[in-house]
Structure formats: structure tokens, C-alpha cells
Amino acid sequence: MAMSTTETTETATTITLSERAASEIKGLFERENMTTAALRVFVSGGGCSGLQYGMQIAEETEPDDIETEQHGVRVLVDPLSLRYLAGASVDFVDDEMGGGFKIDNPNALQSCGCGSSFAAEGESSCGSCGGGCGG
Image (cartoon, rainbow, N blue to C red):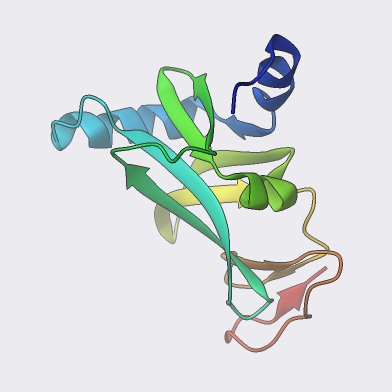
């Protein structure tokens, strides 16, 4: 399915990748000698809040993937995940607990204390991950 210029422009800002996150991802790709890899960001069922975030290295694109490039990193998202991730941002944070990727999602009605699980409109509420839920 071909995308029009308008669709490409609109989807280019649906998930924002920070410069710090891009730097970490590019470093990983370089260490693993992955010259054509992309970052896949997705949502799957499960987690203590009903939905959970996922990120993985993708060597290939799927036919319906929405692809953008930010700070030199290709970012892939499938249309179903985009429904829950539109407007979200991916950052890399370093704190006293260590470093890792963090997704800030304006579509999350509730987020679990573990930070990797969330509830969106029409989804189940928080269960128990040991960290409790924030609102």
C-alpha cells in the first residue's frame, strides 16, 4: 500500500525518538555490526496493566510497517501499535537504578509502577507487578 506525501509527513511525528535514545541505538547497531537494522517499537497484550511496550531490533520491515527516520535511526511501528503509541516519545535515561529506554505515552490512562505496562481507553486496569499503578 503506497503512502501519500501527506500521510508520510503526518506519521513522521507519531513516535518521537530523542537524540540520546538514537545515540544509544546507533551505538548498539555499530557494536553488533548491524548496518541496515531498525528499531521496532510495538505494543502487545499482557503486562500488569493490560498492554505492554516492546522494542526490538528489526532486520526487515513488514509490508504494513510505518517507517520513519529520526537522528539517523530507522523507526518501525505497525498500524495497530500506532493506535496506542501516537504522540509517544522514546528516550534513554540514566539514573541511580541504571540506564534504559523509557517510553512516555500520552495515550496511557494508567501506567504500572514497573514502567513497561499501561492501560489505554477500553483496556483492562492495573493488576499486580509489584510496583503498583500510577495514574
